[in-house]
Length: 261
Image (tube, rainbow, N blue to C red; front, side, top):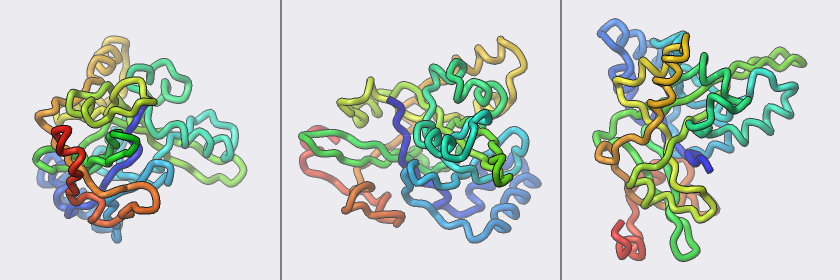
């Protein structure tokens, strides 16, 4: 049961993204200008994948460009838009263990890997019949690189081009195991978070079996010492804080504090 369905992105100053993903002064300047030209980029403090927002990605074809692809992958071989929209609800996440075998992902897993830029993601803890949302981010609060796969699909009827993306997940680390305890899930999961050293390798198109093996072995949970998590107000349902700063403000629950949260 993959799980990263709620994320936060573009909530920081554009220069932070330019500095994080530009490798030298020229690239940083290019990225900052590109982001400024995209104005207004509205900050997204919370969205659920089923809303199919366009989310920020970097691909190997344009590593100095932040693009916005629709969340929920539509495989290139999809027949029509109706099938594509049905698919996209099932392809918000892709299990890292099976991306090279599953028909929906195997072509993208070899040739179209990408980085999805988020500032944090949300997961729910189940306790005594209720669910409690947690916001998870890097300890230094810098932008986070999630591993993704992307596809380009063209609607033959209208000619409209859809660029879509899915988040690759892996087994949860011990912090995520404590939070992600959904009784319906087959064990804790988390997004596959790339560290800076592995970003280039993930983006690079695989040309042989040896490189593919390297990629397969990379898909591991990030060390929990690099992450922090805290409980927040509801992000789903009638009481949800919506796409506002309130979605990422810490809210403590007495019953969870007794459990050591």
